[in-house]
Image (tube, rainbow, N blue to C red; front, side):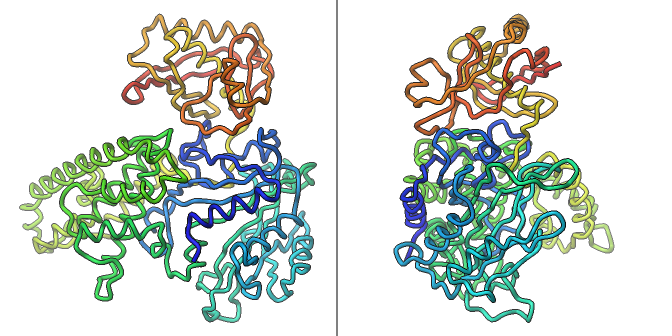
Length: 599
């Protein structure tokens, strides 16, 4: 029976044997990408190379990548939804195309040496074509040559088998998806791969980026088409092991065992209330995701904005469901230890950052328990007036105020109300909550669409400016300054760096002066590929928390700056305009944050 670790190893070995370089998976916290809070797909860190940047490791790549998707947090708790997951991928950057990609997919899936799936259980989908883009007969023909009969090749429309550009224009193309028939009966005459009845299990997806969508809406073939593939480890292993749920695999069973020992309850017991098992799954998923976020080299900490808000929400939801299982005190460190133990080999950063993971979890738990006490106290203050209401109903507005002001969960409000003979206007709460979500969604939980970060001209200018800023800070403040993260938009740059104290006005002015001096010099920006050790020996600065390949890109700005970086950059500093720091503030302990604009 194949395990998550065996699948990961077999996949990487398979593609390395076929000329692919194994590259390191990247951080969960994207660098220089304002479009998304977390790395949400295996191809996300490779977008610049899919768009034409040369990759230091070559044109054939393979890796495993940790990912987080936040759009389905409220759906987590069923047997399938996950917040954190791993993706396996292999890529061709203008090298091989459909023939090799599909044949290798088929071989890995069906060969007894690898996954050994019965070919008779495989069905595939391909793009049916529409106005402007022809039917993908090439992919269908390759599947036929491999023995997939016509009745198991499904031609589906754009919403099923098309990978579009992130914006209105850019690289895009058809994909072909592979499904395993689980043996369940069809739900009806129209049952097909992609149906949600559970008969067909999607196991793999090969994306063929072969077109460029132009401003006029037409498509032109790309000169160097690429292949981008993805396979989810947890779901694939669950299917191969014949499990009904990902929570029955070794990715979760040790975590659930710890929760069983804490609660004295058994996950999956025949006499369990469905809500009991749901709480087990929510805690297991959320603590796994939180452990990976806190254990990341570029870890964010719980906060009320951005990725930190998502982390806080995961931890607090886990604590709340712990209370539903009868846990009153601090408990998340123990299941987090189980997560570290499961993943310490493929992700050694978890073991390296164990102390931070445990410390932050316990701090946030204590903080939330205080929040719960405040909410309960506030409810007690409201209670006399609520009891005077002859209808014995607490308004949705009041319930939402407890949630919005004190972070007090609606389920606990309902529980307290019920204990006092009251009901809660849940519909009124849901309406207030929905309005709140609509206002905050844009800022707090952006969902990754298509994987393309902003590589526009203005963002490229800001990216280059971060190099000048980094070096200027080291000149003015000292060599201890190291980049701790950045975020770029078309309006400004944000740069985090290590420094123990606020900058003085004189220091800010001097940094501005140095950066603008380099812009005025119109220095050339050049790129060289070299071995990582060679790059470091040459004086190139490497970014905090980044995992590098043996061969890296080094960008040199005249005689001023040299950094290991993936790009993109301008060709001369004179293109940047005037640099101005708009704000300098604290980011976290020992880390400062600068906001700046190019005028």
